[in-house]
Length: 287
Image (cartoon, rainbow, N blue to C red):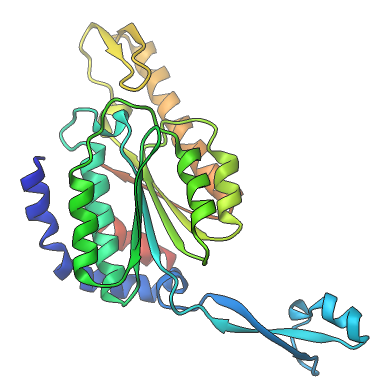
């Protein structure tokens, strides 16, 4: 899609966001937007019936009497969109992965803004391209989207680890981070683990149907858009197609396993799917 076509479609999203907002509030992720997350407030002496998991052992040892931690709701947990603009995200297709990423991100941004949440973003490829601190109003969300529409997928590789490390040093309060990428990258897992210790995350894994069912084109040259490495492959051979499909499925399962390891959300969305329907179905399943 062209920039104009994307923008025209995105302009209809504030209306769609009404229904999606309710799904987010109703589902398990309500804590990420509606404010059920908790942060430490103070301590008081232990009373019969208190949850023993809330005992503050340092204070208890100091005063030789059990004390428990009191918590208050985090009502201002912002949403940050972390969007991958590496070369593979712009690979030609019926719907490019980056186009689907912008549509998914816009829907989530409008949904969060409608519920009074602040929305920010980080755009990256080989380096962090742009970082926008979270703000609450509608013009701020539109500014974020327009900024994203002007960023090219310029032939560089994906360094998700640098994006995670940047956020780890920049975000002072607990946030909800939505990572939108094809995850054609390496050495990002430990950075994700460190970030997941302090923040809530959802990994949105964008997949292209052509990756699963490679068209039979005979013997053709292929080039990695990020490394520029080339090879000639026999797309018409059944053995090649089996190996190709197996590799793609292993990649998807691996990203899902990493998400499970660090207790973060995972959602695979095809570029052939309606992003609104995909997100609604996901939040309904979480509920």
